[in-house]
Length: 276
Image (cartoon, rainbow, N blue to C red):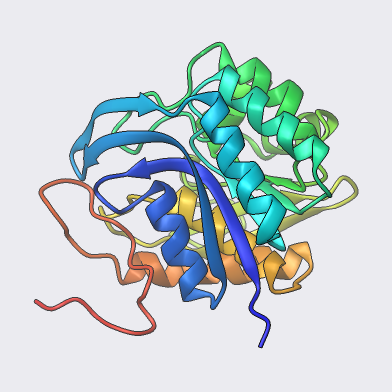
């Protein structure tokens, strides 16, 4: 029996809540076989990142070419890419390979605030990888860094989505989790979070209930991986995003405390519950 396959290109999280570990958990939760290319090794836990060691661009390229030459995933996603040289190696390998749908999560900082992308790599991300992306999934701070403009209003969101699309991405998902709460006089339910999907022609607001939990480690990685898993299963982009958003909401609702800081979302909420 054929099984859908997905690839993550990202950093390793020793705490297990984000990065490659979260991506592979998400793929497994969707019934998708997961492969990985590791770009960096981080020493981190729920309280923060204490050290980062990047993988050489040559080794990143070797990992990627090894997977693409044999396993041939139906979709892939990127997370922490660390620096411009690694981005160059990835972009070069992807351009030389048959096209595979790519979800690009432009990871720049950890949940605790540690820098996961060097400042000089932002330009490389915009020039080399965004044009290869089927979907780019920035949160508000990432979108502001990529576009150079502040985001607060609906008009700002739409303008940023258009700008990112103009960089070459086939579609943009602007995540609303960092957005200021919508004023009470707006036509939006209290406690609602709205992500904005732009496909180059239409804007599609994706609404969901705001989940009040301190344990949000790995949310961005998980959402991008869930979308890639849906694409690997043959879904079109919009239903893949909707399915992924619903999965993440349940993972947040079931999130639990691990360690003494920001705990992870619960990737396997449909199968088991943490013990008290």
